[in-house]
Length: 308
Image 1 (cartoon, rainbow, N blue to C red):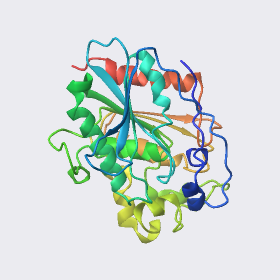
Image 2: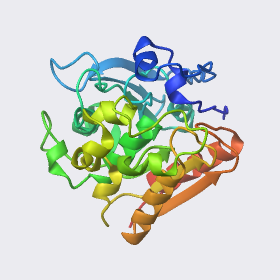
Image 3: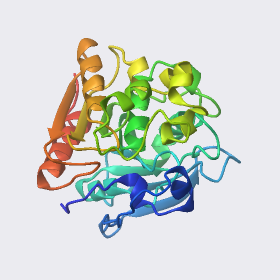
C-alpha cells in the first residue's frame, strides 16, 4: 500500500480564496498523489447528491472490480479551512485495491454558505449513497467517514450528530445519515477553545473575525459562542455514536492537538469506542507505514468484521 502524506491542507490548496482568508501565510507544495486504481475499477464522477443543487453538491464514487457481496464504503471529506479543497484529492482511493468502495465528497464552502450548510451537505451525501446502495452494490450498514483538518471536523460532526435531525434537510429523508465508523485526522472539535491551546508559533488567532472558524459560522467565535457550539462536534457526543479513530500531531500549529483530546475525553465519558493516537513531532499532517497500518486495521475491524 502506498504511503500518503497529509500536508497542511489549507496551504496545500493554493487558491485565492484561501489566500484571502489567511493572508501572508506560507505556502507549501502539495505532495499528495492520486493512487493508482486497480484495473477494472468503476469510477463514477460528479454525481449530484442534491438534485438541481449547488455546483459543489457532487461526489465521485469508485467501485472495485469483481465484487459479488455488497461493498463496505469509505467516504472521504476533504479539508481546506472550509474555504477551499476538492474531492479530486482523495487519499482514501488507495483502499479500492483492498476491496472497499470509496466516495469523495464536495460540499459548499463558507464563501458559498455559512454553517450548517457544510454538515447538511455531508449528511445529504450519506443519505444519497445509502438510498442508492442497491444500485451501486454498497453495504448500507457499513459506511465509514474519514477526513482531515476541516474534513476531520465534518466527519467528527457526522459521527456525533447521527441523532440530530436538524441537520438532515432536503432529499432522501427516509434513510439515515448515520455512519458506522469515523476517522478524524486533526480536526477541530470545540471552536470556543481553539485559541486557548494554540502553540506560540500558531499561524493565526482562531478567535479573530477573519479566522476560518469565524468565517464558517458568520462571525467572530467568542462573540458568537452559541453558533460556535452548534458547529462543534463536542456538543453532540452521545452514547449511540459510532467508533472513532483520532490521530493528531503534537506540534500542530494550526489545530491544537488538545482539540482531539477534548473529543477523546467526551467519547470516553459517553462510553463510545475511541482510539486516540498522538503523532510525536508531527505538525498539521503526517504519513507513513504506521499510519497506513492503523487506518487499515480500523477499517477492517469496523467495516469487515461481522457484528453480532
